[in-house]
Length: 369
Image (cartoon, rainbow, N blue to C red; front, side):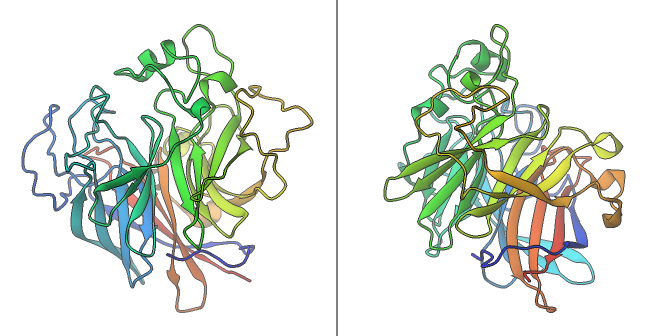
């Protein structure tokens, strides 16, 4: 699992875009229909993408399934090859179901409070096991390479809600502290030595935003959580460019620098912000002991992470059509070294399992000099 050793400065080049049909099937063998009539083995909904470090092999993580938690979709991840050439092609190889420590499957159903999972980020270790971040808790879970839960890593209490509910609206109404409904730990990074995890919240916490009644919070100060697996935890503030944006993934560049997906929720020609930002946490203030942040202007004693634009998907130089600008850019991973010596960077979209929307995988060439 490769991480850059240097800061990547040069303008990335878009090499190509792969499309996976919205009607494609995975290899789970689940031939039944879900409650909404859609096939249980539908391939899509990619919320995270990770390179294995071997050949063309990647793993992709779907989220909680079709219709935003309304079905009993069994959580899983996909193993696939992504071949980078004159065209970008894909080939699915295996589907692995996610199970708890007793061997029972996790479900994406929002009503199964004690056994629900909304997988959003994951990173693998050198032994094939992986860490997964979940939006429902949020949770941070260590899984074995065959998809079975090993252990759960405790997170700061101010990230957690106390009253889970069947919908985003219900959770926001019945909670005053913790992640906003369906806006939990959306992305996850891992250090080169596998000892430090860095998670990113999709939007502001309930107590960190402006709210009227039980409405969702509004604000720009999102939290980044860094966890040393030996026990130390830190938090930093990422300030959104716009209150309507959200964060969807984070991947390490080195020990203090990361790439982050920040985007709006619009599609095609309506999109205004679809960017990969490069951030630096080295001079940011640790806010782990601050339970509540202001919605907008930070006090002088809190320094947010430094951020700058790295890739703008709306840049005309990439020549992407409106159909190639999806609502949800969600997966982000470094890939193998290209024949010309550049590193590949791959970004995947989440098509929400919609049959008429393909899953897209973008491949960029990045100069490390």
